[in-house]
Structure formats: structure tokens, C-alpha cells
Image 1 (cartoon, rainbow, N blue to C red):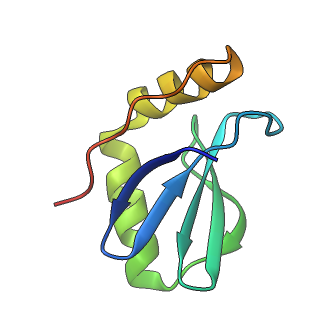
Image 2: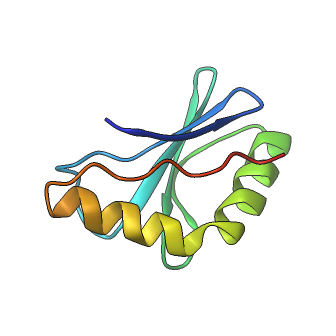
Amino acid sequence: MPELSRFFGIVITMYARDHPPPHFHARYGEHEVLVDVESLQVMRGSLPRRAQDMVDEWSVMHRAELRAAWDALRSGRAPAGIAPLD
């Protein structure tokens, strides 16, 4: 499970053999969400409101990089890291 980014206690990951549609996992403590890369909508799970707001802001800024990370993983390559939210 490659870690793509980490900021303010939030860890963003993707799995190489995960199911479509393209998505990423965001974890904060015991909370987790799966977020669709195209729509940036939560597919499953929940985060505390403040953490979800930060994930939303970050994912809008890095949507193209998230798409590239998904494509890399599906092709058997390691994805590039993505800058954290400042």
C-alpha cells in the first residue's frame, strides 16, 4: 500500500490491486474514507469534518497526480509521492 502523502495526521494511500473505479484511501486515526479520483466524492466511510475538509482541499489540488498514481499502480510501477497540504 504505497503512501502518497501525509499531512496533519492524515495518511493518503492507494493499493496496487484495488478495485475500480480509481480511488484513494484517507486515514485519520481510526477513521477512513475511500474517495473517487474523478468525482472526488466519498465512496465509503467518514472522517471528522475538519479532516474531511482538508482531504477535500488537498484532492482538488492534486487530482491529476492522483490519476497518474492510479495509472502507475495499475501498470505495476511505483507512484510518485504527492505534496502534502501546507
